Image 1 (cartoon, rainbow, N blue to C red):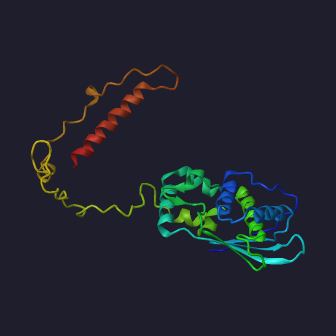
Image 2 (cartoon, rainbow, N blue to C red):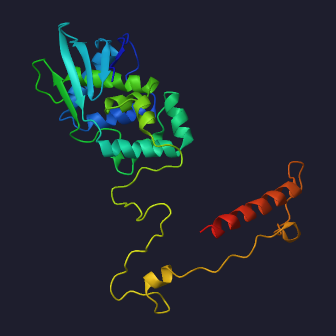
Image 3 (spheres, rainbow, N blue to C red):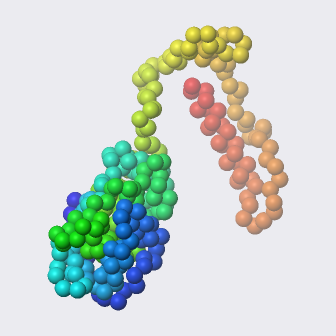
Length: 273
């Protein structure tokens, strides 16, 4: 996966992010801070343009940060724990289930409901952000790492899908691994059905002492042959529809025809089983 590079921000930029994703990123990494003073100092360094070009690679942020007092440049890195494979599978399944999510990712957007989906935390949790810097400060994070993280929130303002790369993959990889339409990602607790195509499936053996309401064993009830279905209604016996409100866009005859065709197809499919 190719890292992405971003030019340095000029001085004088607003200190706060403008979007929900940028603000949520700041709340996530600031939760690990042991002291608010380096956070404020880092915000001042970021606003003054003391952060060099930023490189974003899977699970890693890097930039040279100039100290505001001595102009000394420090090699600053921030490591972010990547998501597990199971988490990516769940995200891919959610994206595949909604065409709007796929279109948003292709446009560089990130749907907000993916922030915390079914236990998958796209934003880093406590302990998942590790700052590294060769400065002599002992703060966690130091002001240089804080400045870098602040400017990353500005990057997320413009490209929220960049958070996927920070967590281990980019949007193209997520879309490529999404299952085809009509398929779902299997859950760990799910089991494939027994039998193979063309073979009758046998229902699982019920627990001892269990039966249906009439006192018949569940296995016997499940395997009983079902009576044939009545033939679908023909043109003379088409289903009766409630009255539709009048309007130039309502074609009652066309609606009745579609309902009759759907009923006939449904009955044909049921007869096959």
